[in-house]
Image (cartoon, rainbow, N blue to C red; front, side):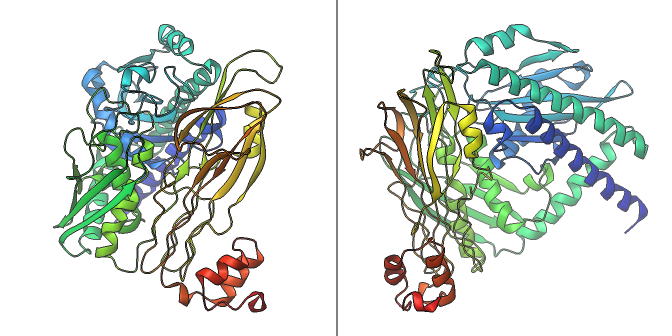
Length: 551
């Protein structure tokens, strides 16, 4: 390797470190638990053409991969030559950014000796931006909250107070929304400061040479990884619970000449409710699925995206047109990696995990605060189901795939809202059987602190369509939604929780991998001993299991 190549590699690593510092600033400064505890964010550095050069490790694929295609839309309204130090730009346009109004994307230009050298971008999920709140019940975009077109958030160091006033006025949680937005601004400023330091240290006056190196090397490595797949067309189909009716997801994966094209022809049309998934979010999670299996060790940037393309008929549920309701677009988006992995399993036999139980994201609303005052509050929760079994290992319990988000800790939830978590434990028997079992889901029981009614927004999948196993593995357990009093609740939509009652969530498990008869007796006995598998389920799922004497 030439000396210049070594220097390039060091600088490339430093850019990724700067992006991670950017993300960590947001985590530390954020007001909402979704950002602070779960990492519901993304952070990245772009060149002045809007191409992503580096990203933070912390964050979610849906945010970072939509952000990767969002920055160019900012440049159409705000060309680089018009940007000034201290500027920051913002939008929450679902079709030009992250797929729904609850995500804001902010772009901050970085300068060196008065000249613009790059752009920092970040996306976070805001807990509430008005409308019906975060849930799937809206019938069009205009019911879902305030829309922010591309505009100045900060102009030469002066905050757009008119915009901030509008954001506060349209939110049930104005303090959290304002705090999270300022956290993004602080992160962008810190990124710009650190970039200036690094470029000065290495004697670089622009990112042109380094950016070209990054994109060239990444695209070359990604195409090489794809070329290991046999050329051809691989198809997969899966069913979703949907809202008003079940949904068919269909994809054809075309592999040719070191590139992959995904065609969603045959997928169901749009929903009447807010579970439609705009194309940028469809692309984000489709790309992520391919990246996880085909090129997991290659950095993600514009170069890695170049060999990948996507198409979907207009007004299908993976490509809705304005003004379709899209608030809960993650319900469909998070199903796409399992759909794509089903194609890759045909091309990469023995290398692709089973399907996963996804993440459940309820929003809970109340009308009395900790002090007993009549005040509306809103709390956005994130809880992880079981991950699908891997070709050589069990699935991870209570782990969110594909969102990569962490569950909100009980302590944070109970200090952030007048709620009590009466139960939070792994759900026995929920992982699918196999030589390697699926990950276990969780059971949660959540109620109000005191005799206060709650309102609950459900946005859950895999209640009637379980995570499928792979290569002979069994499907995981379906999820359940109910009250502690026994009443079954709907898996989607707003519902009232009566006084004194609690929400009970039984999250789905991941699918199993391989023939269950090949699972070791020691592994089965260990699961029984740890309470992950009951004796009855062990005997039913694994006929060769003779009982606890195998411990």
